[in-house]
Image 1: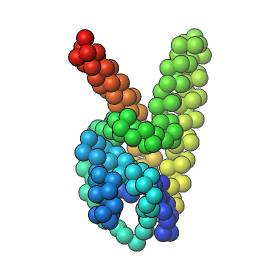
Image 2: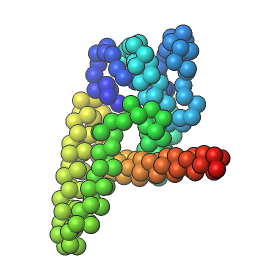
Image 3: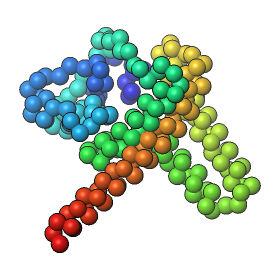
Length: 196
């Protein structure tokens, strides 16, 4: 989350759905939560609120104990991250303002790796893939460690879980994009069939 490392009141783009309160009149003006979104509905809501000229205030003193079943096991964490990636892709097709390059960095890495595979021979490809993957994991790990240290939550398991968060999220994102494209194609074919 963009503001978890601060203990200051601040205006933000979105609030987590599990720990937020909104003015009912504002929610009704912007048509409430989007029922088509199973994931990223809070980001969509926040975007629509702020795009309508209202502000969202983050208050670090407000806390909630939230049981998150995604952490029961590594397998369930991977499944949850896949669903988040897939949900982000679907949400972006509904509200393009939710696109964020940082959210797509794992996807860009996968595309880069595939392009490298197409452009160079196998031995050189293995070397380049190894270097890029190590660089990506190093930067991600350093960022994760810094965030955990700032929050006084350092735990080596958090560092080890990082690949389990990024890879399924990326795969979910790719699958969500493919699903959205197929949905658009089916709609266009259906419209063509109706007009013929």
